[in-house]
View 1: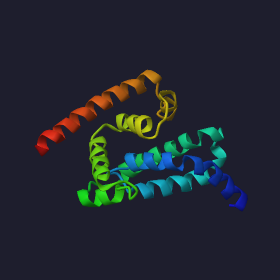
View 2 (view 1 turned 90 degrees about the vertical axis):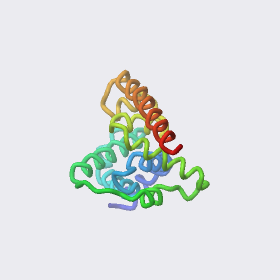
View 3 (view 1 turned 180 degrees about the horizontal axis):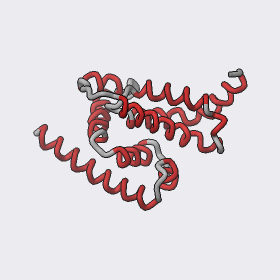
Length: 169
């Protein structure tokens, strides 16, 4: 790896870092530490950078790789439980007020209960800011399928959140 290759990779990565980190924080919740997902993804992306066809699609390239890493990790992982405190500390954003961090952790727990494709579509659209067309390309689906996932995911998420609120009362 040459210095020039490293600089090229960093030039592509720096503008998308924040969006990619938000995606990883939301998507990796309960599956693996988001930092591990980011690091593994960046390593694979650096090694496969020559396969990137369009530099403007770099973030989609990263998200596709991270999605495959998570899928492989799920297949390999044996059933294990995580303590809520460990999960919260791992995903808490030190730049957010503590109240907001608790709300984000609550949202992540709710998202983790959705099917993978719905959760992925919601995270890509609502948190990462991708368009429906971009999500359809990332998920290799039609635009109508993505719209349906978003609608069903929002509905299921609302139901999960309402149930959680009822339990807390």
